Amino acid sequence: MAEKKANSALMKPLTPSPQLAEVVGSEPLPRPEVVSKVWDYIKKNDLQNPQNKREIIADDKLKPVFGKDRVTMFEMNKYLSQHLN
Image (cartoon, rainbow, N blue to C red):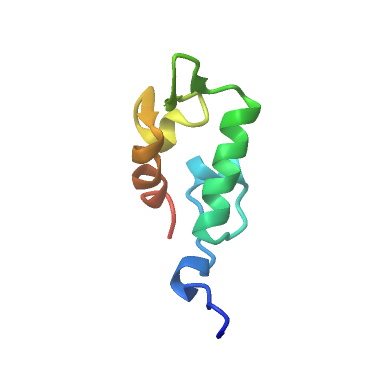
């Protein structure tokens, strides 16, 4: 069976905006790694709503990235992509 190649567009390193760099660092990273680091940050800082784990409560570092106080985990990627180029 042939090896499945990773989508090269997905693995292309992207530069985080200054706001996102506050959370993930300023080094260019592939999109999946950015998402993973944001999740690490969310879990480390206990930013999931305890009543609804799908909701993320933005702290001072995430508010500028999300542009609002709360986002769902499904909305998160939309906001993150606006901060990657």
